[in-house]
Length: 539
Image 1 (cartoon, rainbow, N blue to C red):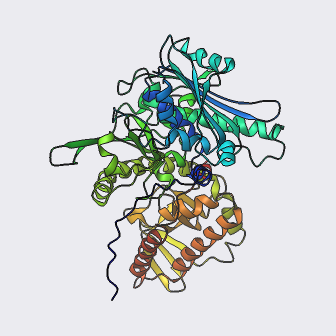
Image 2: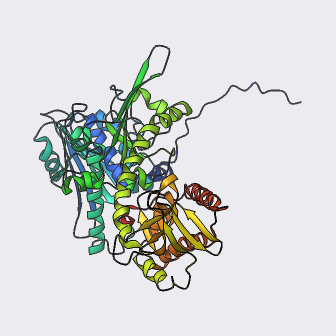
């Protein structure tokens, strides 16, 4: 056995390869919206009251992005620290900046030249610190360039700072935003840049809602402009309509032996489309399937959502449900905030707690949604079965299996005759509610929640179909534009009714009732996992 070495351990400082590291950090998964938000975070952390975002393209197709603010600004040492990968921790732990990487990784995810231009004192000069990825690759060193700002860069700063402290973050050599367009300055590329800018404007209005809303006391007010246009706060919860949450809970979390933090959850159920006070408010609410779920805020800044954190999938019947979850920096570890501050994870205890809390709000949202859907379905169903009525009527005489013999004027019982003789039934004798409605009639509900029941309409063998049954909701409605499918479904159920009327007798009539109830129950379970119809399928 070899003896252990007596050699004293040596330590070597091994510098990472600058080009490989800095190029690798470009692929941390930033989207344009989240990258811009990281820059805005730094401006808010610097105490800015005005933030000016500009996204422009020159005649040659070169995109330039700048974010200017009137915050505290930085001197030479401050600039160097800000541009360091893994800058020193901020004194204020509640700052929106967290890891000391966001400015660099967010920016170089889209550009190859990043500059921070800043004035640290009102009577001081304007300095510029620049990371140029092409220069780093060429010299193979972590060369940060420090220089005096150019006149046009000072003008960009003073447009917001007015000669006082402030900072501009400048992206040049933007190579990853419109890289798929062969003509960098063409119409399609310019339209795409406009879409990016419009999407970023909405993202900012949602992420910084509490900062942008002058009536929200939870965060300091900030004005954010995008290409000269002030961004208005977007309220996911439509408080002007909802007024207040349907459920609210402040939950305490022990984070150490001596410290306890808390988070707040508030559940809002939005009105249905027909209940909004105006079409303008309805449009602003963005009442779509993808906007449902949890909106999660760290230090009053939206960092995640909307989604259900993998607890549930997004379904149309949850469209009205939006949940606000707020916490501060003390719970960063509990919620496992990621480097982009755009994703969180719940540990098992928090996950279980949240699932239990959400049961009530989700149930209420589903109930309100279904009431609205039921009204829509009821209106649509009146015309949905016209083709079926016409088709069945053309063959009904050939397929008739039973006739009405008499009606008891006291009990309402109907005696029919079929191949088994006379049978007394509790069955509806109806008049048409619409032109041509003589074989298939939609009805809001049926006794015992069954999907269908036999009837006679104007003396014709008929079926009443329960539009409140999940089978109708999830099978009929998504196929309402397919006349052939609807006729096929109606013909099947009408055929079951005709067969029942032709074979029912005093000895087996209870069996037929049980069969309808049992089939309806089974169908209810079978369609349970089918998606609800999308919004456009309900109109």
